[in-house]
Length: 538
Image (cartoon, rainbow, N blue to C red; front, side, top):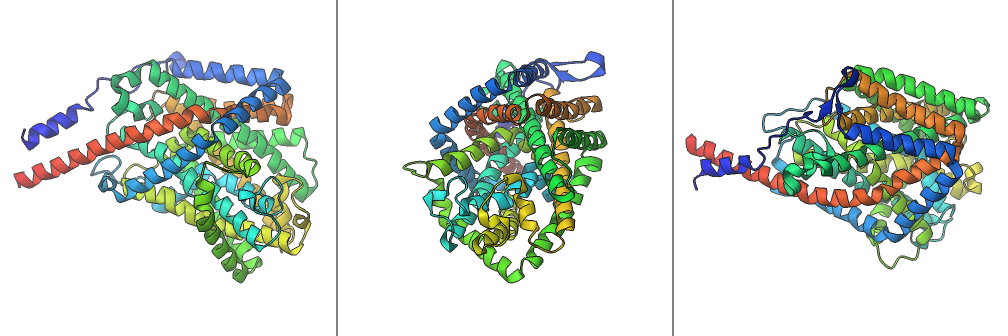
């Protein structure tokens, strides 16, 4: 078989008849996938109404399911996380890294800075705002378990605390996001498939991904995404309200929380209508600029020398504790292991369709090597700097008996503000922190609406704007309704449901790795043959 025949044979393997949107229906001028949209909307409605009518029962039942998943499959979550990291690192160094998303002639749609900003804004910007102080201080003060049962309160526990925080926020979560994002981008941009989770399994299941199997996968992705976004918006409203009460002495009551949800949703709606360039890209750039200012202030005001020491401690702790914390067997730190690590892993996995899809949408034109390096290494560096600045100052305050953190954590949502109140310009920095929290929520809601709309439109990226508006409004409505009817209990129920979806999605992601490897191997072999063919012709 000559080179030309081998090229034809390889190209035929991805020669499919399915057209993007062929299963869609068009009620009222909309463009909706049947049955993914219908089943997703129905399941969401059932869960939300059930959580509103029976908040305590829902919380109890779903929390029980979540706890069973975490306790029974802790080894699976941790092992899978390790697989995802090793898989992504392997792709960086293997020859497959030369493959460009969108083909050899594709070029990026966004600058590197805008690209990085959107990665963080969608991925975990809000989490870093909330947990950068609370988590390391929590470990240091033995608030809710310590990594490997290291006793709290001294310099050794500070190293363990900073190392554990990095473990939860650096390589592993971004590897989870990276697997999904790269799979979606590759099969959509290189193979011409719908930008949908089902497409990533074509090498394994062939044409069956366009049928019931694919419908189930996409529906699960939509449900996990909307649950995660709605609960984050609801809890975020409670956190922002706490910050407003701290700063302005306005009671953190239900009307204020509903007002925050309404405000965030309104701005997100405008952003969604404007699209990626005029909406989430603009807001992400603004937010990263504001975050940079707050970061610089904390570093300077908290002492540059102290920051340098905390940065060294953070990365030293990460290197020291990375392997022990990655071990799924023989653990005796169950409180920490289950309450923090496994919960995080389940949460990251349940969020991976949302974050992965959004990263895929803004990453056309990058090579596999460039993509994974950016998704893994850049967040690790930036997260380390952020945690060393905020978490380092918080732990130092607790260690040295400064302010309320010396007595431990009373309210995790206020921990950042408790740290800032012991620094200059408290009112200004606290206000900036509240703004950052709110804008991060807006960008998450905006990007989440784009993602859900893409999946429920059968992989179309240019569906009618009314659909994005619907999903954005739905997130706000669900969060507000649950706050009104069930408060924290209802939100916890929905959060537990979202985390529980992490179990089936773990198997989905492991299969996705194998499928992606087959796809990229095929693409690399094809590129090699085309290069050989071109060289022979010349």
